[in-house]
Image (cartoon, rainbow, N blue to C red):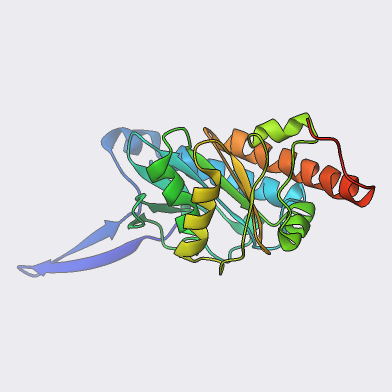
Length: 231
């Protein structure tokens, strides 16, 4: 990690001060370790970010994810434009749900509004995952909501709504997604963009993103075969 230093000269004596980007205590000194702000949440963002790539839910540096700690009222979100397998916990950025930077040397995901609006408005949501998975993105480009033709739609709700296109990273995109999902949905398709999934934990939000991508594939093929039967 990066350590900065400063010097102070008093009465001819030079003192060196080291500045650590972590909380530090005597007990940490005895253990030889440091405690990072939202360390557990940052580690989860790193872990599940790598899973996004390895599971085929996104490519390159695209997509983003976050975890919210309600006890501290802080969110840990993936950094902007950084490869997931090169991201370490200290690269994950800590923000307030109002968007104020609290800790981190990286730029946060440009789509942090997609995350913070849900943390502010839905007490049941403590994690957000945004992907560019193939079939969900195809449906979003067709502006097809996913109808209830398979029971896995329950991961989202009664269906998976699709919103119109809004520029990525815009507040308008976040507001439209939040309005479409309300309190009844855990997923939606972002027009000509990708998929958004939320949940009470990062594990659940990630699982939702995986299952909705599977469902998008099933729905696409069902439509190509003439349409599915609604439940």
